[in-house]
Length: 171
Image (tube, rainbow, N blue to C red; front, side, top):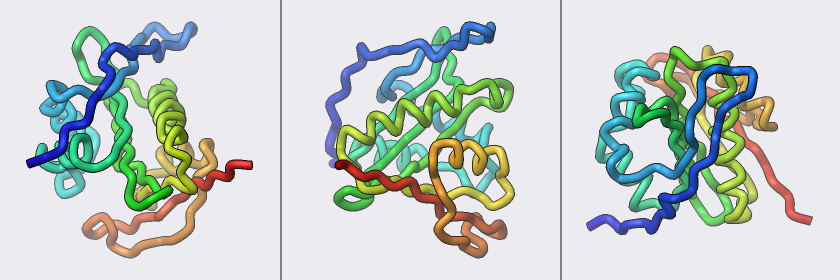
């Protein structure tokens, strides 16, 4: 039986940009969102790199996690999931933004807000994996001070991946 995580479903913030006509709400992921997460994950990533519905449930309700969803009028436009992998170490599990709205700052908003949520747990680091040919994602992660710490051959089936890390210090 999976442990259920209490969620404050009332927290919503605007992820809109005054110069942008697209507006979305940012809130924590709810159980009723899971099927939409699976659909968007399939839209964003190639077959073989997508999560199953069971994996989403594990990350969201069994493991210690922080998650956010970007939605507009009930349509899921993006989401991010972070999970604790060991004490003081977290992983960015996945960051998805609908292809039609990529490049408009929504990935950065999800990442920024997600990192703030994870920082409440005082991590020493957040790690992530990204395909070496995903230049847009690598550029975004670098803007948030993630650095490449390792290259992994065939991490994504026949594609290489990077392990990137963001470290924190609390003085």
